[in-house]
Image (cartoon, rainbow, N blue to C red):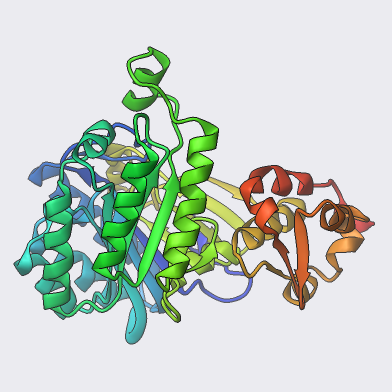
Length: 399
């Protein structure tokens, strides 16, 4: 049994970032391998009851764990497939068990086909101040290939309604490298997104995940995958066009106007602690990583017997902590803060990887920018290969 006091034993104080997973969708997308289930009201009601119980267990008998939150992110799945009333119940639970201030970045993910003026206005009045819309594409055929339930026209409506509701911080998610997608379609989509003037854009290179319908259609020859050259050209187009429009790239896949970088994701990229609630949610707390039960029934069953719904937990070794800090730090265009790295681990990076950074700098993959180590433009195009050079080294802190 996982005891509450063992889970809530943070190394540097309680996490200030909260993620809540809503595991429901109207229909699962063709490319998605996230944990999600078809929405029905009965299951959604059981889920919210479970979420309340999970928060109660974390709070303890005296409800002493009212942590101050700097960020809240309600993701999925599709949170906005829930009714407005259910979404407000979740937000109320957060207010009961945590401390949220007007300065807290509070994001809700939404599918453009599952929002209207009433729902968006209610979310904004409840304190949600950042909306992340899964636009993904602007062409009907690409949206169909991805299995999305919405149209580009619904994305336009959703952005307009969000502005009318008072949202001044909107992110649009995009996907490129979709089978059958052309460069011209991608250029058109970027142009359409720029016209909407979002504060943030996330542009992801499609990954064909095992077990997804889209991967099976590609493997069977029904669809022809994008070539690496085309995907790279799309990525470079995103960087050029979004940067020129005032959306500066600050992470491999993320672009923002000044001061609008996603603070919640920055917690992940700085390898800091966070708490995840709901089925399949992951947490990183006090040198441990844990994940909740993915199945709704298993999640509920544990909670009903007074146990936290943790499926597994593991210690984060110093070797993996160092590797992850480097890997995540290099994802940001500002790079890895070398001073903070040394403060965190007690030794400079060159003590752990003698000669490696110098070698990668000489190859033009990395560069020093003040006290930061970052990918060059050339390194950015082969980021995973560069980062794999920093494989965990056993007993590195004993050197």
